Image 1 (cartoon, one colour):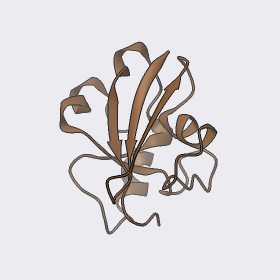
Image 2: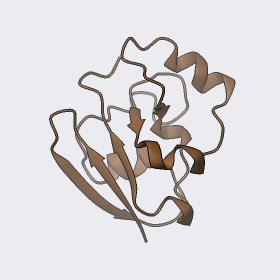
Image 3: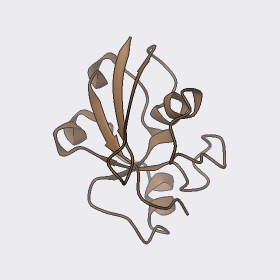
Image 4: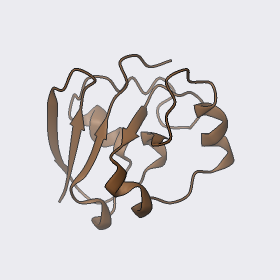
Length: 106
C-alpha cells in the first residue's frame, strides 16, 4: 500500500492508503477526497484534478507531458508545483506523497 496525504485549500487533511497502479486522481476519487472533480475521468482533457505537489516530491515525479502542460496553462491558479493528478501514477516511490488541492477547479 502507498500512503498519500491530500490537503484541501482550507487545511483539512485526507490521508488515504491505496494499492500500486492507477493514478493519484483515482486514489482521491475512490476515497471520496473533496476538491478533485476529475470531470474528464483521467484522460488529461481538463484540469479539474489540479493539485499542488509538496516540494519534496517534485523530483520523484515523471516529467510533465505537453498535453498536461497545455491543460495546466488554462488554470488561473497554476503554480510552479502544479500537476494534474490524473497524470501521476501511484508507485512505491510515492509512498508518503503530499498534495494540496486549489480552492477551485476549472
